[in-house]
Length: 504
Image (cartoon, rainbow, N blue to C red; front, side, top):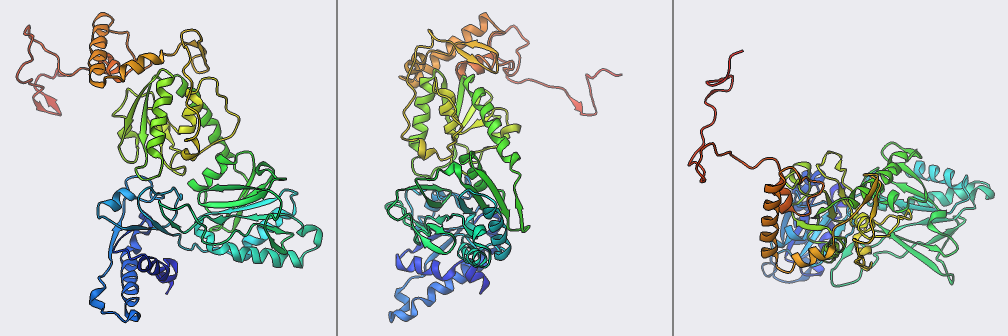
């Protein structure tokens, strides 16, 4: 019974039968894969039991094909539509944590599972912080704790009624889950109504006739009256210190944030480590401004709008007078990106909860589309706002092409003024890709022959120039012949002592 409740077997079976799906992909993250066999068995039994009350011949109702998907190409928080398409699936049942990135082709049902939490302890910590602060409180949570939010609010109401009136008067706004079912052909619909504002913890009210501002992040949504700004609120996060929490900290970096650790039953108020991430991201923006060759990493093949963002990044990079290359390689790691040493920096187009890569061990830094717009849009300044969701940038205007020959740019890393490339050169090169590549290679080889030590990674303008200017070129020809030898004999003997090795 615990498995059926935790994985919502009955709701999943009703979802499949009500929409007449016959091929269903079950997507498990790595940590839940151990339960996949039991889930499939329980779900199959439930689906077969739903046929019996119909009064129809059971043989006419074909068994639903259930296929387990694991080891997703990209982040497990996104619906793996590419993997599901390999078995011609009608829908995807997504288990575990999700980023709620919209699907583009397949409907999806989300099963968050239910993480254990001490309701009274969580409510007590929240009540203490809210009562000692004059700020409105916004309760956000990891999706695995969505099942407990109603009980937490009831516990808060009970604690408020038993306390003195002065300590209980504070505004509480609880977020709701946006939806549990997602369809690419429909707008997102909430599976339950908004709880809205709880006035003095005694009533359940909406904004009423007053105008409200709507916020959403990571599958959560909530309303605030226009008299309140999000920066004036205390954000109370219930859940782990994971990518979803990092998304909240960066997006609402102007807010006071505390985190309740349900596993340790403790409140964490020191978030200096998370806020330090912003300083490094600003450094990467300045470093990206000096880059000449940029690699666009495709971090998703299913999130709606990713192709438009890639196209927008290409236009942005070309308009800034730089060279762009699009790379598809699954999940990036230092070994994969080291195969492209010509790239000075990479832009990772992915869902908001996998966009931040700790690239300290990478050969070149990895930035987000928002950081790329700050770096390559001449004249833009960082106001402190941070956007993780690339779909929020799709309506942003593309950089206007300026005359780089008339205006130099100051580089904080190089400590002086530098001149960027003319964007018109990249436009002319892109007119005929094959001819442009051949011309660029020929030009690079001529420059390399004339100035063998001129080209470096820092001033190469394209991949062809970088490859022509690198220090290694393969085997050397030791004869006077212009053609290479049919084979090259290396050192012979044992590794402990080659035949031509000089004795010590």
